[in-house]
Amino acid sequence: MRTIFRYGGIAVLIAALVVLVSLPFASSFVDSWARRDVDLRSQLVFSAVREQVDTLRARGETAELARLFGRVAEDARIAALGLCVEDRLVLYTEGMPAGFGCDAADAAPGPLPLSLDGATALVTSHVLRAETGPPARLVVLHDLAYIEERARQARTALVLALVGVGFGGAALASILSIFILNRWRHSVLQALVDA
Image: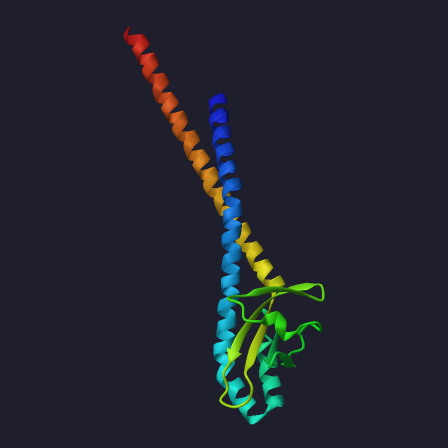
C-alpha cells in the first residue's frame, strides 16, 4: 500500500509541475484568443454598418446615424461607438467615456487597450471612405469586463483540463507501476521457489 502512495505521490507531483509550467503559456494563449475575438467582432460590426454609415454621412442624416450607432451599441460586448471626422469625435453613443479623444484610436494594427474614467476598454478603429466629405473613422470600444470574464472562464476550463489530464496520467502511472511491481515480485518469488 505504501508503494501506491509513493508512486502516486510522485506522479501527482509531476502532474502539478506540468500544470504550473504550462499555465503561463495557456494564459498567454487565452489572452491572445480573446483579443483576436475582439478584433473579429470589430471587423464584423464595421462590415455590417460601413455602407449605411457612408450613405447616412453623405446625406447628412446625423439623427439616423445616431440611431444606427445606438442599435449596434446595444450589444453587451460593445461599450460604445463613435465617429471621428478629421480627428474630432463628432458622434458617439451613450457609453463613450468623457475623456475619449480620436487621437486615442489612431490606426493600430489591432485592439488597443485604453484606460479612461477608471475603466479599461479595448478600442478598434476603422477608416470610412466616403465619396463626399472629409475622411472619417468608426471607433468601437469593447467592454473589457466581458472579455476578462470570458478569458477567466477559458483559463479555468483549461486549468481544470490540465489538472484532469495530469491526475489521469498520475493514476495511470501508479496503476502501471503497481502492475509492474507485482509482476516483478511474482517473478522473484517464482525464481526462489524454483531454486
